[in-house]
Length: 286
Image (cartoon, rainbow, N blue to C red; front, side, top):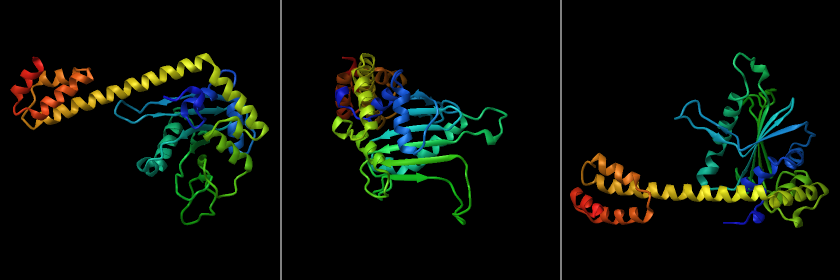
């Protein structure tokens, strides 16, 4: 487990804690977004780690790391992302599409005209190159394939920012911001704006409530990881036993209800060696 002081702004916990902080949240969000968007922003309301449910329990929801609402302006979802595995990179465009869809569905009230739909900008800040072209900025907008010059404005935009990119001639202050977000140290706070941002980051890291929340988040993650391992072992046992025939319901329930990892590990060994269901049941009841 890394210490809170070791986290950078590309770590979603710190990004979320900074932008949702009651004192530093709005000025930090302004500093970051105004550098990215190249414009001044109005009053911002930060809604940290907002979860948008699916339409029913079997529909996919999303958890947004930093959700920002500009008064009388645009909506922003900012997603620090370090998970650059092959599958994640391939699915990134569809992930962005889904985020836009969920945000749109949640902002237009029943009976409202489509013209009232808010402009939405989804921003991914990645430590990996999402498209392999070494660009700092990739801006994605919908348009006409046959006539790229045709004006088509639907209010949706996705911005991918690659912290290590070298191409595209972005503004120097944006390069420095991305460098600072990946390595949030005073050495990388080379502008007056970044020095102020670093002061806010440092203050948030020293906030006792933030530290407590970090410990709780780690405990929750560790518990979920352990529960995942337990469920995985139970599934492995059931998979081995299924080769022996139909698993009696009471036995299945006993295996899935077991929460001791060491016990499940022992039962897994039994399941791998047993030749029939009765023998396995005798072993685990002994």
